[in-house]
Image (tube, rainbow, N blue to C red; front, side, top):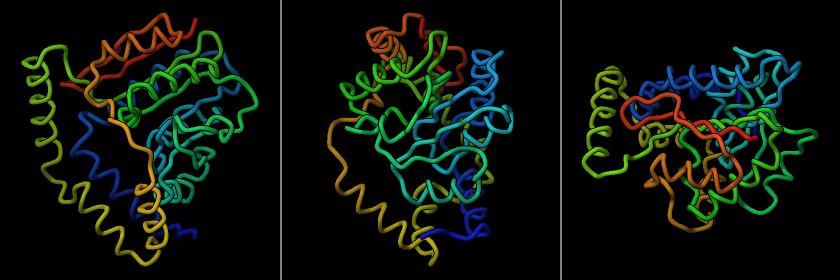
Length: 255
């Protein structure tokens, strides 16, 4: 069910381009995440990093380029995106097919030592709040003391008016930055489904989504609420280290 290197390259490049429409200052956010990970893993000879909701390996590839000695485990439930990552960013990470937060997902990672860092971008908000809390707890048990969980995502503000303002700033930036982008999320998936090399993977993806567990996503949770959940899960040092509009990088350090 593999795809050719040429096909993977085309679709990953198109993915990177269309994502500019949605992730506010995406490249800077990736850089900040790498800055944090590099700092908390300083002095570690082969840091172990877990990338949650890795997609086609966008963040994993940037971390691998920045930290070539790191061992990166990248997990996602999407068979199509995983295959694109395995093919186009094959050396960046070890890719794992698992659903974050579901029974057995930790075992699927096959970790042989404690993690130095956990990273994620625009993935954890898909988890319902109870599952998000349990996931935070599970990850705390996998992190070494001094290790960090680094989450880059869009977080609404405490009040509706402030949330409206930060979202507006983000949308205006995205319009300016993505004015040259002609493909959006929906059209990317629609066109990918028409590629003969991706048809089987797309069908498998649709079947998984159809049977995915229910529950309300936690995309409405503020950064402050995430911080509360993280402290409840055992991270006592939580801080936002970067923000543009409603896009933030939230860091939780395990004591």
